[in-house]
Image (tube, rainbow, N blue to C red):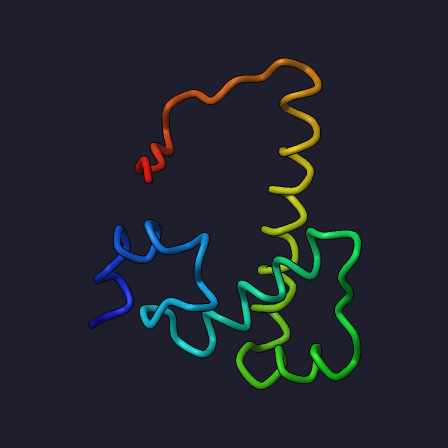
Length: 94
């Protein structure tokens, strides 16, 4: 399966990414990193950051961190001001 193949299948299994066989090791690290940034009861400690560095360059880590932080910002900003979805990203129903 190439990087672009299986996109919809991965999207459908995203909520259960830890148990899914569809995600690569790098994708799992990125998803774990995103969760650690997002949830206030989790942290990115030195040991985990060392794991992130095994899979991504410094520039990629900065870009990934920015993307996660931006989505976290939107998840607080948009609902507060009543900004609704514009229909660009249709998430399949479970």
